[in-house]
Amino acid sequence: MNQSVPRSTWTSHWAFILVTIGSAVGLGNIWKFSYLAGANGGSAFVLVYLCFVALIGLPLLMAEILIGRRGRGNPVSAMLKTAEESGNSPWWALLGWVGALGALAILSFYSVVAGWIADYLCQAVMGVQVDTPEKAAQGFSNLKDNPLRTGFWHTVFMVLTVWVVARGVVRGIETANKIMMPLLFLILLLLAVWGAKVGNMPMAMHFMFDFKAEALTPGVVLAAMGHAFFSLSLGMGAIMAYGSYLDRETSIGSTSLWVVAANVVIGLLSGMAIFSLTFGYGLSPSSGPGLILQALPLAFSHMPFGQIFSVLFFLFVLFAAWTSSISLMEPFVSWLTERCGMRRARAAWGTCVPVWLLGLAVCLSSSSVAGFKVFGYDLLDGLDQLTNRIMMPLSGLAIAVYVGWMLGRPIVADEAGLKGRAFSLWFNVLRYIVPIGITLVFLGLLIGLDKSIA
Ligand code: PHE
Image (cartoon, rainbow, N blue to C red; front, side, top):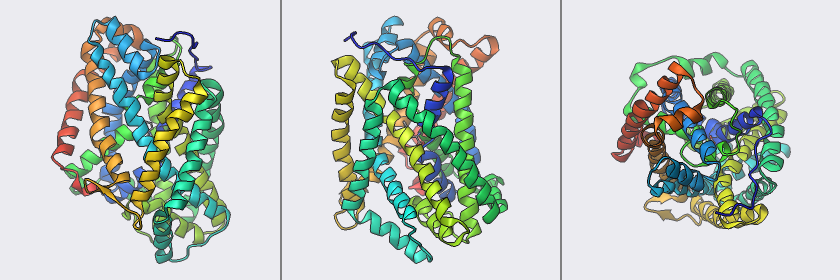
């Protein structure tokens, strides 16, 4: 292990909360949440998702932060060090590898989707109008079918991501989050208020929260569970990497509660704004991955101050994506700097190259002109499914087993800093509920129960 690089620490526990919220809140909460909820019966999906966030997400988030902080290193070395301390096999470090590499696989398509958002932001700034549903659909497929255009924006987004990561943990990641997250929250509040004013908020609330038992199918349950992982950045080393820069005095329990609460509030508020506008302008919520790129520009073209709000909206999504993409890159970059003694900037640019190339392949694969398929999937869909359906649940399961059963109660209790009943409650949920829950999701995903969510 190269010890010459001193480890950074977040400047305060609020900084840690902010960057972790920054990682959690991303395309998942806005792009994915709205189209998944739209395609999966609204409230059934939303309410089940909330249960899984509380029952599986929160305990796992705490477990990941705990490993990172105890191991004080990148995900691979944090796993190695904690395994060594607790007398477990060094093979557990594989979990760190799955996380760091899985995060890069996510980054490759995440950056392409963030690139679509950047393209729409540009159109919004230029005042492009889409006045009919046909034009909206055409606009989206024109973009996807042009790999030069999607490749260009993907490149821009990757450069932005590398730029922040290369500047370092505090100077880059913390500063970027301190600037973008408050702005993001402010824009979201504006959008939600305006959405309520010009859209149809009662219908949005009804769609999202009126529980309809008949909509609760196994597919919806499984989609909601998978989304709980994705939206909280679980199982991919990102939270472990961020946790490794956390000082020992900060309480893992209360910081995690803040992160989960903010993630849920931001997700629900953006869902309310999006659906209020979607319904307010008579559009369908179930149009799939293009929902925010088709329905919303149409709504913006018809509403008062539409151009201003469309610029704000796409800026909001872009900020959210950017603060998440840096956390997808950090696990591998911190491994390169700590394990191979590379300089941060070089490590970040070096990591970017393969991810960028894979992203270019995603752009080609998504276009109907150059489109190619891998095992019947287009690459974006394939990578999304591989990471969401297989890597995240498996890795989450392994983390629950590792912290719940392998590390040993004394180490876990010492590091978690929770007292009495709170500790027992969390520890038991982690030992029993989380592994059983994830096993059920995983089995369900394997046997294809969630075909409905495609
Ligand atoms: N949580 C992010 C989102 O909702 C995605 C992400 C997944 C980020 C895994 C880091 C690790 O968009």
